[in-house]
Length: 628
View 1 (cartoon, rainbow, N blue to C red):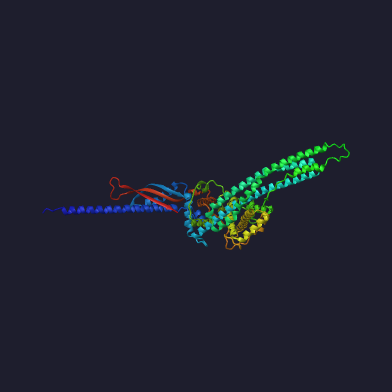
View 2 (view 1 turned 30 degrees about the vertical axis):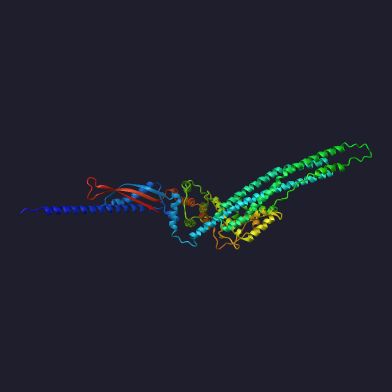
């Protein structure tokens, strides 16, 4: 019986299909597994690379920094960590063909955004007391900007006041010249009464020389009047531009207390017309004076040529002859101005101006606690990140990010009040000021704190009717009872601004002594009287006051300055401080070598288990990235 092979062939073909399907499934599973294994290996290797962070940077600043001078170091380290995975790939059968770092982001890149992110990642686990929220941060920023704007405007108005005082002094010079002319006129008239022709002409010549000074004095007066007018216009433009930064109450107070500047300029226009008429009057007087001098020569000639032969003749009538000279001289009326200068108590004015002079000449010596030495640290280093990477960089940071940055810096950096013995001590001050020495940084920071306090103090004075009345009373003493009302208002505002400055000096002295000062002043927390202000100008010394328990300390005001500053600039300066301090143990440490994020792309060669023909190998690509 002949057997048929159809069933055998059928089953053989079926088994072949089944085995092919099973092998394909196995190959597909192995390929998928190899990709998963490769991804796991790549990520694990990258984790191992980033686990080699700089230990001292973490211990001192709680920052993860991977120190690598070149991109090749990351690639080489990654290959080293991934090699054991390749050697143990077993079933997956992998060999590394190539690997490249395609994205390296260093901590100095991005305008400081990577350092900011690390700080925020660390600070989100912090516990803070009395920390403001987003709304509070907005209000704080508004108050700080308002204080800065008020300080800027008060400085401009103070400059205007000084120009007004110089204008008054120019007017005083003109009045003094006119008074001197009257004195020479009277002296010449006395010589006429004494029948002294040469003496009369000497006094007349002195009078003429004094009259010749008038055009120069008027020119000086006109220049100062023009300078004042232009300066007030610029200040008013600045006041208009700052409207958005000022609250409605402060805007109204400033507008009311500074309106006197415009009134003064308008009133000075009438006064200036009277002053500019003086040269014409002087010319008329000179003509009369020449006639009087000519007549004096005629009188002397008559007397000298008188014929004394007649014994009954008593000689010439000297009274009548010289009286004719006096009649002509009487026509030379010395003009007088209907306006007098408005600064009568120049001593008090000088003392007030002296207070502001301390800011330029000896502020640190005025506010430093007794026995406290200024650090001599120097920060000049051309390798600082702020020098090599920070130029022109801009970093956007939210209000809460700025507050957290300030809290971070307060935790890890030193300041004037710190007790640590370091070569460079004023690290927080450097973040604020960015100068090359500790002394310069402290001086600039003190000026910036003074700016905040002066602005806030003036805001309080503008809202306190009693202090405004005291300032107006002192202004009345300075300008005198005959002083121009607008000038009295100008001097009153000057006194208020100097008073705010004097109180700010006391505030800063307290802060440097380690005491607290409230942000918003009240009558109870105000310390400096007007008498104390004048004494400050006289002696150049001041004493701190009682500490405000609910106030803000020195480092708190430094955090306010950081809050106001440019974030990118501050982040690079922070890198400067980190680099400088870590270099004490590792001289070649540079922040620019520190990696924050890296990406590696690699290609490995894997082998087909069941298929492949003449080319059983195939490439597998992998991408891995890591950031702290």
